[in-house]
Image (tube, rainbow, N blue to C red; front, side, top):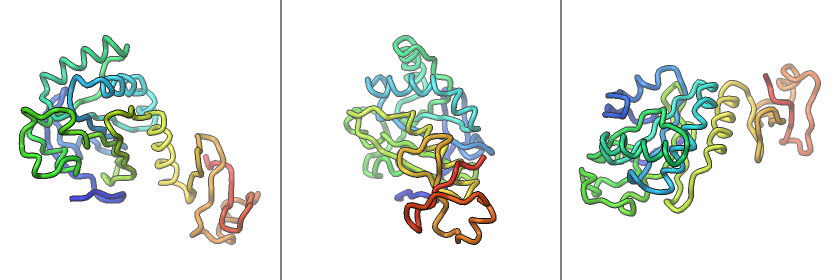
Length: 219
């Protein structure tokens, strides 16, 4: 099953380093970041999980829960977490889903059905496509997704920026332009007429093109 933006994030029940969870229940009324890893004890993912742990307070400020997933079991996750803390300086403070039967990675279309039903004997290269990030809203729908190669570490500062944009644009009738950051001007949606925009933005806007209308970021 191919997953697209605005599809419902598939629900699942799984063991994690913080106990058994039902994914949708665990999300609750929060936003969520689900990010996957092809194998425990891999170098690039080690740096990523440590950096994400350091960013955890920023995600908490945004009412966003973080959860990782790898195809290995909880025992391996716990041992790997010690390596991550020792080498990266941050303890993994969010749950890591164990997926030794490949159920979740197949549910999220990160591995094909023909990959089988066990992680035993599989290398990181076999699971290379399990390198995705999903941004999921409180409505349990996928708001954004990204997939990286194993050789390229993910930019979690960018994922935080992406979350900021998704949260802002979910509440306001605006879009965020290239390289936008918190506090910078945003763009009025093309679907909003000038007449309607004048009611919301009585001070007007900057329009280098009729369909490109910049206004200060709404509060």
